[in-house]
Every structure is written in structure tokens, then in C-alpha cells.
Image (cartoon, rainbow, N blue to C red):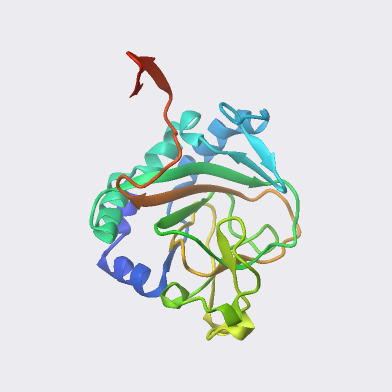
Length: 235
């Protein structure tokens, strides 16, 4: 797959300036279909410890270690052209902080405007097309460059995020960038950019989610281990 070869210096500048790039219909549907085929059996099984299967939290069902069930998902996350692009962004080759698939199993009132805590980048690959009925994330362009002052925070930091009142901030609705495109749309964004998920009426949205950080940053353990001479070996 060479779709990420589309990424250019212009995209890098846009990511730095706006905090987000949206790449409509980037991943071919046959690859999306393969990922969905791989993950379907895992969605049918839910475990409490989530070591080998999926779990349900609120209105979401997750496969948190999707690389264990879908080689194609792992190949997308580690695409050579994508990694080279991220290397240019970070100044070093990145590490994957998390690799998961999220499925919305209920309609919900959405997620208010917020900024995720910590550095790094996130990537969403839409396994179902972004649609307001099913939920499409919105971003406030250039907000990642803005200090979140106390007078326009909506509430205290909760669950590794800071919530923001747009009307009290320097931005307005004209600065909102909506995710658009069809199945296979990719969105790469800085974790600190302000973003929200408006209320949606239909369940079923599926997204492959990947977090990237500078090399040696803390990350979830996605690899199976075995013990040898009291030391962990990864393979």
C-alpha cells in the first residue's frame, strides 16, 4: 500500500500550523474491509480483563490491542511512508502509544470540546464513513498553539483532557473544521488541538485509532511476551 506516499511537506506544514490534516478516502476500501473482517469475531466476544478480546466502556466497544487480531491494521499503522512523515514531524522515528478500534454501540450526546493532555499525534482511520448521523469529529484550527486559560475552561481536567467553552475563547464556530470524506478517510492531528464529537443519532461508527509519540515515550504493551531467565523477551 503506497497511499501514504501522498503525504508531503505541505501536509507537514499544515499539521504544524493548523494542528490537523484530513485526508478523505485515503485507505482503499478493500483494506478497510479486511480490517473489519479481522475484527468482527473479536467484537462478538467481550472479556473483563481485555487481554485477548474486546471490552465495553460506556457507549463504546473497544479492541485495544487490534494488532493481535488484524495484521492489516498493524501494517497501516506502520506504513513506511507514514512513518517517514512522522519522523519528519517528530525529528526522530516514532513509537506507537496505542493501537485500537472503537465502535459506537449506542447513539450519544457527543463529547464536548476538549484538548487531550500530553504531547504526540493521533490518527483516526474511518472504517465507516464520517457522517453527522453516526458521529464525525470536529477540530478548532490552530487551537493547539493557544494557551488554555482558566477563564475559558468549561471544567477541570477530567480523564486526561481539559474541557473548553468555545464562546469564552478566542475562537468561534467559523474556526471549526469538520471531518469529511468516505470510508477510509484518515485524520492526523496533534493531541492538544481542541476537538469535539457533536451529538449523533445512529450507532455503528468504527474507527481505527493510533497514537504516536517520540521514540521511547511511554506506550501500551501490544506485544505478547515470554519470560526467559527472569527477563522479558518480545517477539
